[in-house]
Structure formats: C-alpha cells, structure tokens
Image (cartoon, rainbow, N blue to C red; front, side):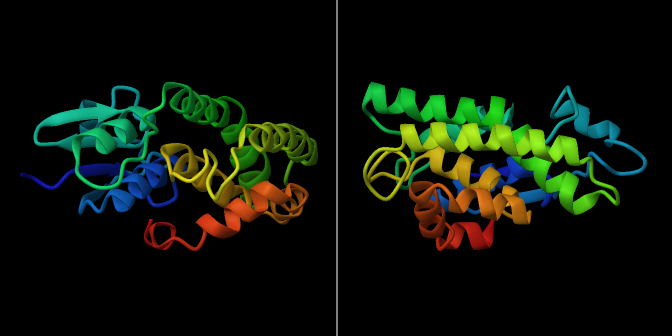
Length: 204
C-alpha cells in the first residue's frame, strides 16, 4: 500500500492538524511542499488536488481529499492505530462541535488577528489584535465549558478535537498576549501543558 501524501506547508495550522493525526495513528507519510503564499502564486498543478488552491490536500492509493476535517476523519477510520473519535454519539457530536467552533470563531481571531498580526507585521493593527483577543477570550470560555473531566478535552480519550485545538492554540501562544490570555483559563492551560508534551507535537 502506498504511503499517504499530504500537500501543504510547515507553517500551516491546518496542515499541522493533519500531520498530528497521522503521527498519532503511527502512519508514515510524505509531505509534498505547497506554498500558497509564494510570490509566483499557488502552483497550477496543485488545483487538481484542491480546486480552491488551499492547503492541505491529501492522497492515498489514488483517493484524493481536501478539507482538513474530512482528511482527519478518513485517516482515523481507514488506518490502524488508536481511535481518535469517540464511539458515543453525544461525545462525538461534542467533538465535532469543538472542531466547528474553532474553525468558525477561533482560527481567524487567534491565529491571524493576534499571532500573525503581532509577530509578522511591522506595524500591527492594534485594533485588530484587541478584537482578536476579545474573540479568543470567548472561544476559551466556551472551550472551558465544553471540556469534560479528565486529561483531554473529551475526557480520558485523546480525540481529533484535541489535535485540532492544539494546532490553533499552539500558534496563538506564539504571541505574548496569547500566553497571557491562556493563563487565565486554568483548565485549558493544564490541557495545553499536557498535550504539548506529546511527541506528535514535537514531530508535527
């Protein structure tokens, strides 16, 4: 069986999510570099893999996928290794709710409005950073409310929600404001301290 292929870039939060899932499942894979921010633009050949030119895309034995959540679920279901989705319907629904919430309300505010703005702009837009932090505060409050007792977001089982959140939160923490805000949420800070020790985060 051919090694699965991930198309994307090291800097991408969503590429990292897919790589974390593959690593947690113990799957060897190939990363094909695709830089969507390159001066010459997204390579023309890549649109065969992702019609919207975003990253990541994925291929396994001729089967192609794009969209991070679809890739992550496929990897969990198609390969051997520890299960990363709860069997219980309600717990699985909460996992999907957390992932959807992070995509809709966390990614833009935490990654782009705070971390990228603060770290990569010569003159950061302070209003944008402030608005991003307000949204991030709400995201962390909701994440605290949804977190089950136990080491991971949904209790004793590490799931796709943990890996999704770890990639976004990890980027958020590159900014000093991100570190300060997370410290105000003891349960999520403890979760981060725990998941940051996993070898998958160091590798991915």
